[in-house]
Image (cartoon, rainbow, N blue to C red; front, side, top):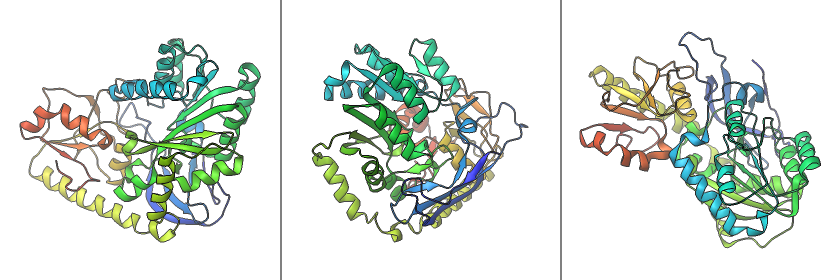
Length: 408
């Protein structure tokens, strides 16, 4: 059980870490056991907020090789929505920064190469991925997308710089939140970035988590939860500058952040975000209080409803074998006595079991339909409701614990 507990903030090194949320001990959310009897390791899932820079962060840190090595089961290209999203992402980036098209494009946490492939399709010649997750990165290499199967750190950055020189564009989607050594990570990106280069990253936007009670977005891979307050602190202290921001619909509400080596004029949208964060009082610790009690209330009302429905003989399945779903299932202490099975369309997960709760994952079938779905991928709610119109027309309903009303 290789993990340690942080006592200081990973951005500003302050020891003033305040309690935010305790979800108990859980197994790793993206490691799906192949058998129901497989023994799993459980790790504490405790979140604190820094009283100085206001970074919300996990303090129980599981070793990267355990988190992202072996059978880490996330594939970007498994989601049709993700495929379209990253096609649009590549086009928008190409249109916004045409000067970056001739040099190296480096994607950190490139997974199966879905985004990089779109840049190749747009005519970019020099693309490189980095990702320590063996199954996804191996697939990318088989597709002809050069991917280094290692975690991105200063040592690797120096190796890449020696072979490829500087990068005109560095992209890091849904990975900055995974990094424990954040200052080293950003300094490594700075080392590789050309003087006129652009660093773009996406991460879940913490105010959405806080004010919409999205506690299931918390699991061991997500070590930090960002607003602009701690991000500004981080980049300023390594000599980089945030100059623009964009909202994204991924992960229940994300931000795409644009960073450069030289100081650029801040966009109006960035100024608007900064102003709104002030109005949210994110600089005040009392804003973070009460989250635990709200989450406990969600658990209580959902368990009561699920138990009531099951006693009445209703068939309840889970919808989507996701990491956030596994946080939900474990914190609600559910199992196959309440949730018969989880339906999913990812071949890598089908035939396995959910970590901790040991609910079987099966391929969705029109011939096997429940009365209720517990929606474990609520971030795709609009498209799922559209896709499942027939299910709902016949009386089927979705249970979405973090929403009110939570039966749709």
